[in-house]
Amino acid sequence: MKSSIEDIKSTTENTFVTWSRQRDWHPLKIVSAEGCYFKDSGGNKYLDMSSQLMCSNLGHGNKRVIEAIKKQADKLAYIAPSFDTDIREEVSQKLKSIIPDNLTKFFYGTSGTEANEAAIKIARMYNSKKNKNKIISFYNSYHGSTLGSLQLTGDFRRKLVDNYETAPGFVRVAPQFCYHCPFGLKYPECNLACAENLEYIIKQEGNIAAVIFEPVTGTNGVVVPPDGFVKRIREITEENDVLLIADEVMTGFCRTGEWFAVNHWNVKPDILTAAKGITAAYAPLSLTAVDRKISDYFEDNIFAHGHTYEAHPLMLAAASAAIDEYRDYVLDNVKKQESFFAKKLQELKEKHPSVGDVRSIGLFGAVELNKDREKRIPFTTADDKIAGRPQIVAKIAKYAMDHGVYLSTWISHFIVAPPLIISREELEQGFSVIDEALEISDKEVIK
Image 1 (tube, rainbow, N blue to C red):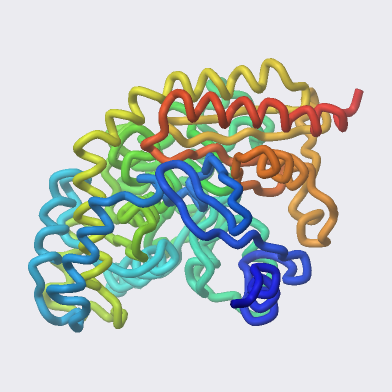
Image 2: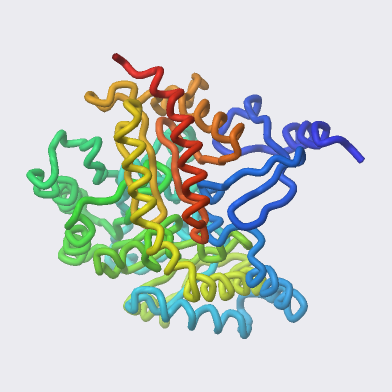
């Protein structure tokens, strides 16, 4: 049997890691996981404070989900998507009991990227007879890595491939990011300039089929929108006959303390996309849910989209069990822990001069680091990451891992999004290590 070092070398030589310089990839070999923890080949145990990629909502080793997958595998592992199955009916009915009630028909893919790619095509097909094909998205967003979904994306990852992956019909606008307001204004005196700018762009561009947004910005900082923003963009899209797409790939399935983040503002989008939490990452599955007016359109028009693994029975089995877990106890735990979670984040900001801002909703939070808090100057920019320059967040993440806590980092912030089953004691453990790690960035602030 090869040693773990040889196995790792084989992995780095033969496979890619995402969004990274391959030479810099030196992975730990993970051999097992249970609850909120995972273990490496050296026997070291780590508290998962970011749910891997904000997807392991039920933690690791959930018996109910695992048994559901096994049971479905024994019964029917795969069938072409043109056939009906019991599990397809079961999951669809469960979704109808938790999703905004205007969303009446579902397409099942295998990733958040695929869900958003489907949303693009659906919006364009639905609007084809109106000759409307443009999709508006927000800067500071992330919607996926395929041709269409990457064009929706507003962060630097799109620019890395724009020279050969640019597609027509996409428009990006300034985001709802109060801490770094692109208009230099302050809420509420700004009168939601970000939303009003969206309306201006819709009217000036013309031919807008849809607007896509993350109800709470995910990877790019867990940006919770200001009060009134989500309702206002719903009004704007309705008044201008434009579809509204809510990307809930990260925020869906109880992460924010509601089944879906749009519920916080009582807003019903025309299309909602989800993935990650739908199976709690036990199997790859995504959801693109549409309003009845859209599903009715396709009764007499071809739905020109599909995948080999659409509505895959094993993946749907995982979703069915995961939904039951959320309903039985997980959503209650998020509501129980969220105030303590927000308090611990706020304490980090008050204690550490390198913490410029903290943001959270439910068990979804971010810690933004600044070398100059007064001027809101980050330690690292996207250009620094592209150039491979050292990142302070990488040093913090390394310290945390060395002390048994895993954090997902990005540019000049890290995301705190533990499994939704986490206990108060585990939160204390995680925040204690984060508190210690931030002494690294405190030493680098501009005095």
